[in-house]
Length: 459
Ligand code: ADP
Ligand code: ASP
Ligand code: MG
Figure 1 (cartoon, rainbow, N blue to C red):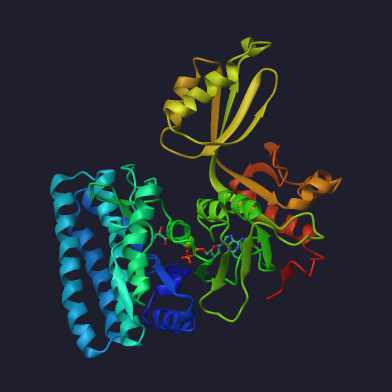
Figure 2 (cartoon, protein in one colour):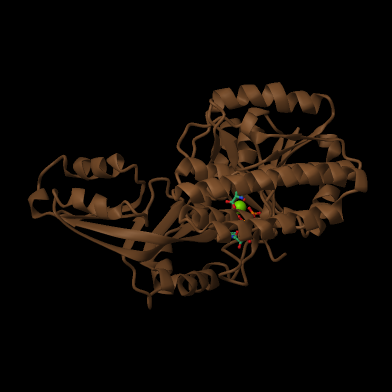
């Protein structure tokens, strides 16, 4: 079997869902399980609704909900036969009425908890799985919609819930595999799950890719396909640099590093389950399905260029801790990391000197409290609006002089921190957020002027 995940833009409208049906029809012999996102931008829209309701603005929340209802009904009316349409229409009416009741409840209490947030946010994927399954049915694909809340079991860390793999894998086999065995095409929503007690959760924004990988690993898929709006993983974000090239093949570790450092095309956790089961991941374009996309596997072919790609991650804060009493003392770094641990805050880049430590974290509301705790250890300063630029490539280890070339390419840009990970497949530095486009373009011009045709393609 294979998993096919379709992201927001791939299922954003009747025309998009129709394209998806054709793509799925061409893969039926491979027994696909389909994972779909909410329609594009709809999760943002749900966030806006929940915030409006949470701040007591019931009318605005309901207005936004009405616009969403109309968008979905429009798609459904274009997609479905009358009989299927009538059934689904009344079901969706009930769903949207339920959403409105929930928003009214939140507005009445005037408080939005992470738990209710997840209840609202899960709505996009829940309804879209129903719509896509019905569209398949109308187009002769024998499909079965599956409520992901009954399959993906997570802990109760609402908005970034952690999947519980043993329980999830049991349910995947019991419910999704059973549907496949009966020759159905199962259609599930990505991004969502529930606790063991059945309370809806979400696994982090952009998490449908991760859902697809969880399903693929749990069912020992031959392949996990991530269908999106670009021709695969590119040498950099095509929105930043119009000359970005398609990467034909890339290794798991390199792709994971890129995803972690901001290549939004893959959610950062996607590759973990795939790596564990050694399942190839393909990134493909639903608007251009004949393009070969990017194949992500354990081993990628040798590449003549030192780097495969450049990623950038914005909204970073640098924290500097200066402590002269650290001179010659041990246990200082441990005390620092204990503070971050207590606040459950991940640290990305670290650099130390004899009397100071600089580190980066994703900008978040806990930083002032973290800084207060760190003040017990030394003088603390923090500064937001920074970005990490990360160059990734396996050849980095064998190519002398690469760092020199990198820093001369960005010699006119102020660089705050530099680091090369122990894996030696990434070279990372920190710049002002506003300098990202320039840094990325200048690096791209230098390192991809002569791309290895075995690894990169212009289309
Ligand atoms: P989906 O809704 O299908 O999950 P996303 O918007 O999450 O799609 O991811 C696709 C987008 O990721 C692309 O449109 C592109 O703007 C962005 N992106 C960032 N870095 C890269 C990269 N290195 N290669 C391809 N796309 C990238
Ligand atoms: N719909 C969710 C989001 O926008 C999950 C996803 O699309 O991957 O974050
Ligand atoms: Mg995505």
